[in-house]
Image 1 (spheres, rainbow, N blue to C red):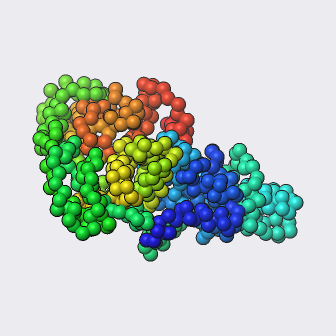
Image 2: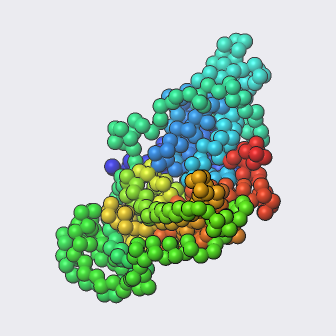
Image 3: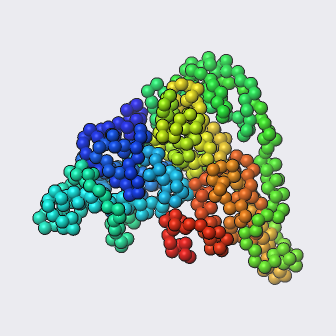
Length: 543
């Protein structure tokens, strides 16, 4: 990919401003400002707000507040918006949002994607954005013609005066509409009147993904960019005790070998010399306290823990006493191993670190946290850090972890490289890199009577915390074990056994919300259910 194609967002904005005019609308907040904004007023004077831009060339650009990783939100979000906007679907484009609070998840309060929440969470917001844009476009046409807005209708991106047949395209009205004050609230269609939502619709990102023009993190190329791979320890928590980089530095193309907190970075002109250089490193590792940790040991620990008392999720009757009277007892134990997320596109991150700014290109599910983490490492205020969210070749929660490990690592490497750098994880790195889906142990005990019918059963679950030690620990509900099983022992939420267990945070948040709903229902806690009603619907909460 060419450098101009890589920095396409910035150049696209300048081009859009040059062709003159346009309209952008947001429902809840003003235009993001600062250098990281795709809609900054200084770059597009016709911008009104943050979510949909209508150009004088008739293009309609939907600003996606969530990451596209194959789940289809780059089509579902435009569908929601255009259901109300009623533009020509063939003119719709999608652009990833910059990092700004205006794009925060309506429920979780941060910019993120996960837990299958994008479409339900944005069900109302994106429709209102489309309706708001349509209203000001119609108002602009009515003002131009000296008629009432109520006498006009919209068809495929064209405003039509019903009585006279006068017509004006959205693109021709965009500049005038951008000067109008959007209404504070707009009525939305009755679902029975939907013409786009609920219909089979071709995905907007399919053509670019099939012809090779789609831009993922691995496609990013910057002028003067170097590429790095990192030798990470064979045991979590291990440190470099001794390093010999002599042979690595002799590999043609290798520019430097630098220690970073996560291991040893080999920085080269391209990926292949970096990889070959890493293979030449001689590293003695101090394996630390986890040197003796093994899957077998953890399985034994989990099984032993299952035999101990734990938090009770639900108890009906006295299963322990009933089991003692059973004619036959059946015990079954099951183990679910650690699972790597195994994304099709391995982790990668490009960082251009300057004295007063930091620009990042990566596929991420966690923009707010990643920017804050990168800013801390770079020694910059968060507003000086830009993140360009590229298409993700899969995510599954691996690209949303509280330590922002692959982003933080890349910023450290960029500090050492003193040049723009792309840090690439190989498939092997990705599989061994941690943040796995947690391991679980389940133990069932059932009591049968003389006829073989069940009279009692218990279900004990042992797992790991994905919350403790993270900024999400406050969400954890440690006094309850949130399942419908007869009994749940050990640490499904409360205890942390290690770094491996803190994975899939986006899904975890939804699980915690579900658990919160359960506690609300039993009267154990009181919370403001407004955001929950937004996500799940008031009727669901009442049920």
